[in-house]
Figure (cartoon, rainbow, N blue to C red):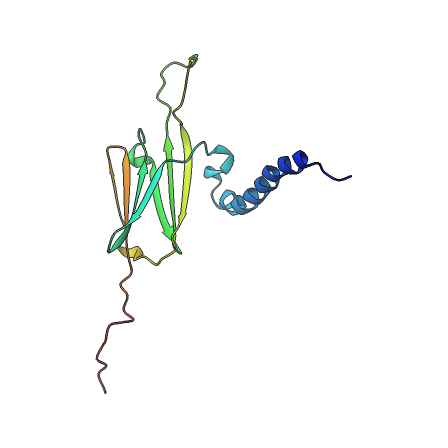
Length: 148
């Protein structure tokens, strides 16, 4: 039986969900404590370039510095953190709740090489700033070669 247009449209998110599950399978296997089913939200991220680096700013209000982990491998920057709930009472009847709590993992793939030995991160006033210096281009520099 052929699918109607509306049935076809509804199947797209299901198919995409399967694709994302497949792509994220390795993350779950390698680091079960950051299992995708436990990740509640993604932080707001700004990324821009300067003449000598790429700068990434991540909004992490209420997250303690000790709960942030940053790693870099093969041009992939991974930012993980845990934001604890700040409620003292167990049973609260919210009228509105827009803040997110729990674990998150943000993966950013860079499309240009950076000097991983010189990456710097600063966390101040709820903003994580990561500076990734560009690799110096040595292809256009003339270098004298000594003769033995």
